[in-house]
Image 1 (cartoon, rainbow, N blue to C red):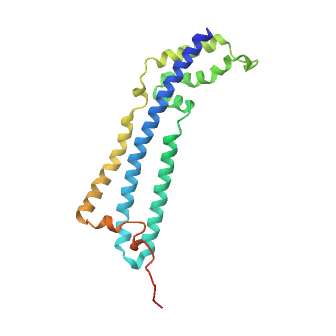
Image 2 (image 1 turned 90 degrees about the horizontal axis):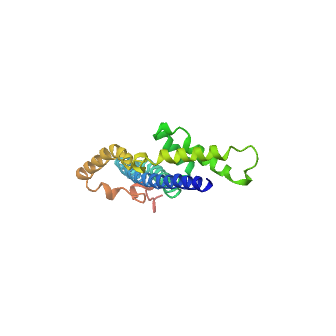
Image 3 (image 1 turned 180 degrees about the vertical axis):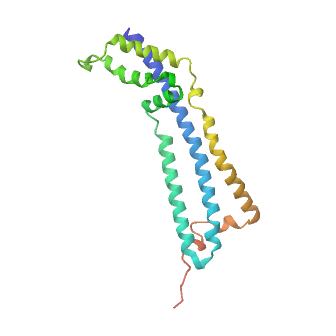
Length: 199
């Protein structure tokens, strides 16, 4: 029976690992779309500070620093979510939220399996009850496909944000071709004007 329990538990863990991988891929897609949207939005937003000219260089300079800080934050956050694989407990919650009929079966199976070890101590549940719980959970997930749980198409919802920003950005480039050349954190427009040789 212990071998059967281990097989069911391994099947459950393999399914959760596949879900974790798909979740990471989803994070990557969402990160790329959101970062691109934020980057283009920062470029578009700089149009007003640049239009003020050198007389208000500090506005453009502050905007540039703020934009770089926000982009850096998004970059660090994106890398963390991309390279840190979500733990099985989080994947189990995602699975149970998607399919309410699972209730807490997946989470309970993950918590109960370690109690089958001899050193678990007194007060543990019956091994028969634990085996039945894990077997029932493994049978439930066997009818599911990973694409039903984690849909990569979820990343497409960010296209509704990115689409209008891209169109606005293209319109600005068409109407004002030198715009990109003027936008740079090291552009003279974004830096304090040089007063060398002036009293």
